[in-house]
View 1 (cartoon, rainbow, N blue to C red):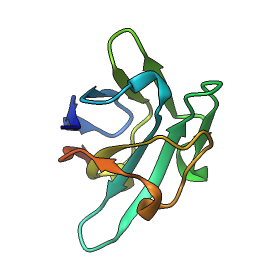
View 2: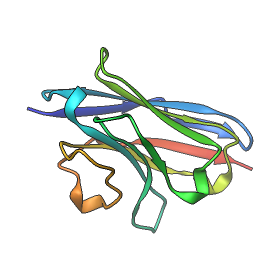
View 3: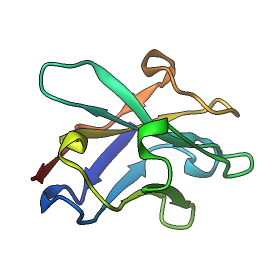
Length: 124
């Protein structure tokens, strides 16, 4: 049974930082592309970042480029999202996702597995 468990969310002031973690189990983590998505109140789930398993290539949505960094530790079966210079518009529930595809995935519907999410709230 595949499980993805996010952690690291919380309340932070604008300009602050948070590091999200997503611990995976029940799959061969080193052969899964991992993604981060977020869903703000009243909006759909949106792509934030992804990292492939073939070459660890990261991809970001434009609004987080230069502020967020996605990384993975295959020895710990964990993917991270380092978030710096946070803005109130980054407030959302953040989800991690996994798929065995060997390329970057930005579409929500293309991921096979999802975590339950972790709340990030950025105050102004």
